[in-house]
Every structure is written in C-alpha cells, then in structure tokens.
Image 1: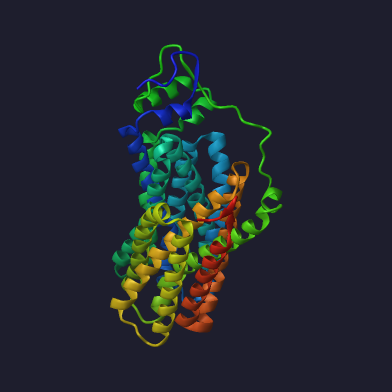
Image 2: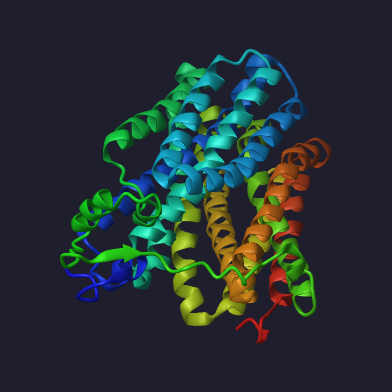
Length: 445
C-alpha cells in the first residue's frame, strides 16, 4: 500500500497508522509476546524454586528476603536503563541484549552456593528482566497501527502471567525429580534460545531506523509491512516540541497533587500485594505441608486467573467505566484474600478449595493492576502523562521491593492468617485510593 502523499515527506508513524495491519506486523507482535512470556518465566522462577532452596541450604525464609529484594530492585533499575539504551542503540539490540542477559543469569542461579551469590546473580537477572519490558512495549507500539495499538499492547502484556504459568508448570515437572538447580537452568535456557533466534529474525523499530539515517533499511522494512512510498518520497518524524516539558514538580502542583499522591498509594499497595504473592505463595503453601509439586501448581492457578482477569478488564473498562470495574475487582480480591486467611488459619487445607480461590485472586488482582494504568493515563494532561504514569509505576516498584521483607515477616509472625491478612489490607487500600482519584476535569467514570 502507498503511504499518503504523492511526493515530499511523510511522518513514518502516520504511514503505519494509515496502512492495514499486515501479517508481518502481526508476526512481530507474536514474537514480542514470546518475549513477555520469557520475561515472566524468568521473573517467577525464583519464587517457584524458593521452598526447595530453603530445604537444600537449611536456611530460614528471612535469609532469602534480600535475594527477592535485589531481584526486584534490579527490575526497577533495568526498566530505566533499558529505555535509555533502547533510545541510544535501538530497540532491537537493547531487547536482544536484555533477553540474553536475563536468560544467562537465570541459568547462572543454578550455580549459586549461598545467598550472597544468589542475590548478586538475581540482581543482574532483574536488570535484564526490567530492560526487556519497555523495549518490547515500544516495538509493539511502533509496529502497530494506532487503531489496534492498545489491544496489541494488552495482548503482549498478558503473556507476562502466561510466563508465570510456564514457570509453575516447569517447577511442578522438575522440582521433585531433579531439584531447583535443574529448574533454574531450564528456565534460563528457554530465553537464551529465543534471544539467539532474534539475532536473525527480530526487526528494528521503523522510527529508530529513520532517526539513525538508515533509509534503505527502513524502505525494506516498510515493504514487509505492505507500505510502498512513491519514487522520490522521503519519510520523516514530527519535530519535537521543546516547549513542552513534564517536570516532576508538575505532578505535585495545584489540582494534580492529591490525584498523584492517591495514585502512588494505589500503585504501591497493588504491586506490594501482587509481589507478596508472586514471591512467597509457594513458600507459604510449603509451610502448610504441601509438597513441591503442589506449591508450584498453586502459583500456576494464580497466574492462570491473572491471564483471564487482564483480558476481561479491558472489556469491562470499555463497557462499565473505570470506577465500577476498579471497585469490583478490588472488593472481590479483598474478600478472597480474607477468606483464604481465615480458611487456612482454621485448618481448611483442601487443595480443591485453595486452588480455585487462588485463581479468583489472580483474576481480580491482574484486572486491578490494569485499571490503575488506565486511570493514570486518564488523570494527567498530555504534557505530563508519560512522567505521571512512569512515576506511579516506579512508586509501585518500591512496594514490590518492600514485599520481599513484609511477606516473610507476615509469614513468620502470623502464618497464613498474617500473610493473606496483609494482602487483604493492601488490596482494600488500593481500591479506596483508586476510587478517590479525580481525573483531570472531574471524577473517573
């Protein structure tokens, strides 16, 4: 298809927006969805392996809390560094480097002999895991027409919990038979294989090729996307408006101050609750007497629910609006966490009850996470939107890091009642914070 305009220049992003969504572009989306799945697999591998590591090394749960914290801190730093590298050297190389880094470091965890070694390895692992997400999301955005972009990004992101499902399935298959070292080794080999394939197959971002002056490579890539400009036609990118800035102080000025603080509270509580479960559910189930296979299956069911909840949240947001969707997810998740707290504390240990409850909890928490990102995008004006969403996500990561310690403390002090009680309180706080946020120009719908 021809790009708009018979001669002169044309915005390359607009050319992609105006053209049909080609099979090549859909193949790019499918490839990047695999990246998110590999990212989720590597990220969840430690939580799955943790009960086996504790038994093997004869250490307490608290000794592994710094390992979790280092891993999550690495993810936070990696998200920042990955975006900077993607802009400097290209999305393709930054993404491939991130995949190879977290694949090799996940496997290297199998060689760790103590908690210090494992902490160092998992911090570097986190750098790769974090760096992959912004570059993968950027490539999906830059290869997808605007009319399908939101859906495409949602499809890519939903593969993160699918990777968590794969991690749980891998643990259920290997932990009892071959141990945690084999499990981490296998969890790293899969991303390494994907990164090796991408060296030959993954294309670079059209916008980056244009900025780098690689017009011949851009033309070849656009032809694969069924975009063929007329002879003599040149693509360009729109000029950057240097007058538009979004400094940090804008988020805390005037009417935005309270919305920003409430959003930070919501993100902090949501990610702290989410990573408390990601990191410590297998260990919690193991302390209740379940075997390693069952503890892995427990996290599989949680992530399976997350996949369904994330997909449904988009439909509900369109049909019911933010407020009803957010409060509904938060209320049900809070109740499910409270039910699990009292049920397990009361000695009700039927796996036929626990697994469906974990699936429902994953369903609601994933949907709740998506509603917060939607709310953040609608709260800030255009000039402050990227900064606002980025800062809210960064504050949420602080909650994720803190969960490494609060999760194990709640288990040690209160057992399953304290563990799920903490999750219930955080989910309730997230629901109230989101409900209270006013979007620009009025309350959220």
